[in-house]
Length: 130
Image 1 (spheres, rainbow, N blue to C red):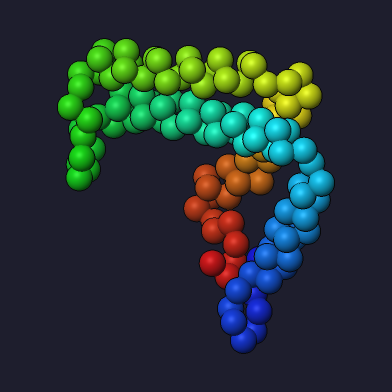
Image 2 (spheres, rainbow, N blue to C red):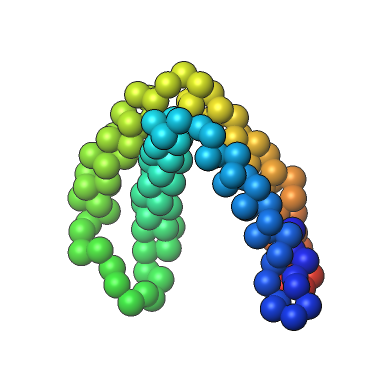
């Protein structure tokens, strides 16, 4: 996937795979695509809020260009409604979407712990040419 075109320096294998996968999705019903998209969008939104809360509690004094002007307690309260809406959205997807989405999420987490995490601990780059 990481091989780059000699002339254009683009990851041509990844571009081709993206095109093939996109072509496969073309045959899915639009409603199913929208549902899968909302499932993963909701999941990513939950993860962003969880990262926000975790970083605020563990590295609250870290210098940054902008800080949300809420106390830790109020930030947790402000984060609760969007998280609950995202959970509601995910739970209202079809059974197949929830099962497949959860399987993809679990596979991604296992892949992270097997492939990426050990390299991070050793300060090794994931890709040699990056």
